[in-house]
Length: 337
Image: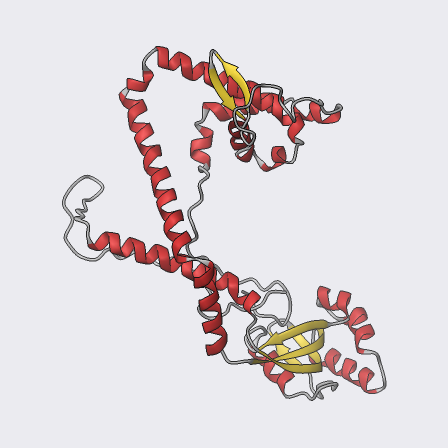
């Protein structure tokens, strides 16, 4: 069952740049095609005993942490190239033991070195298309590394700790309740349940037998600890009026059905540092990106044109707002996040 979104929580906000390429580049990659062709043999390898030697190649290694694993016409292949290729494999292949993948990936890198060398013999490194695409890739790498370093400076441990401590000081403690509920279809059924409880029935047992909430049936109706905003308003308001250890005298109607509620306890809960950290890291990351882009735009001479190259009138660029996806509650009582 899902909780409500915390006001100001940065769901769906920008994150630090990802260094891995998207699927269009992968689809166009001859390297990927070569590798995937070879990986079609992986299931057969996986059924056989794993080779013993590839885990520690015997080739000469000038650096212990990045040994040479092959030479192709004098060109060196380092272990780091194997590791980088493995990181870009589809998830199902990343689960295959390294000693199984190693010889396959090594042969593909050897093929790639040979193809690249043949292209250089044809002087493709001087080709205009090659130069254009290398420049585009260089731009992407520079963007990613520049942003990553800027974010690392802004989102330091000290900055995160200071923001968490400030939020803890500024955010008041909130009341939380612990309750159980039994969800039924109509008021008559709810009042039958209340009568059964008044005659000494066990709440958890009745919840397992009669509640429409799958989680409630499994956990005896236990909802755990929750605060205002975690539940639909009418449910929380009714629960807050019930004394600890008591069952509400009347059922409560919500969009999910009719609830019989038992409150088991309440506490005053201050925000915990561990719970705030993810939110703070996300906030600081977004603030760093927004601030950096804003500073760069302020000092830039920017001209904008239409899709056909025609002039566009000066003025602010208004981005269309993306409509929120309709909420689909995943369980009774709790508000969807």
